[in-house]
Length: 112
Image (cartoon, rainbow, N blue to C red; front, top):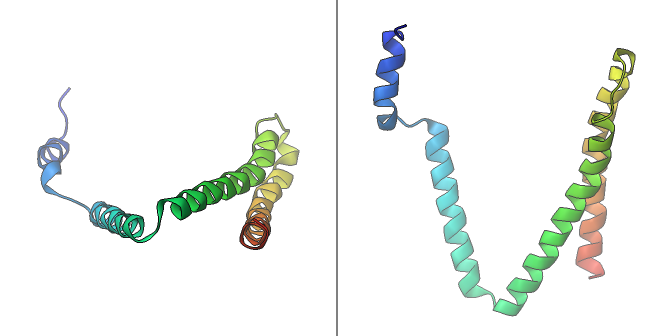
């Protein structure tokens, strides 16, 4: 079965055309690379290591504490009558994540 001509023509010319999102992604990755290389030259290795380890720990802890309860609830089987409760629970994940991020950030800044 033959493909429509439009699909074949587009697939032949696809390397020639870039969407705006492709260009934005390349520019943002280039800016991130330049900023990281500037920071690595500017900051000492000890400070950079401590900050990266602590920020990674903060990020992982926040994501784990905000996602895991939602995952546990969503993987269990529910009846159709319980779907409105589940949607409310899903929307509750956003403010809980923000609160956890603020609390853990304050702990990171003032206690650690």
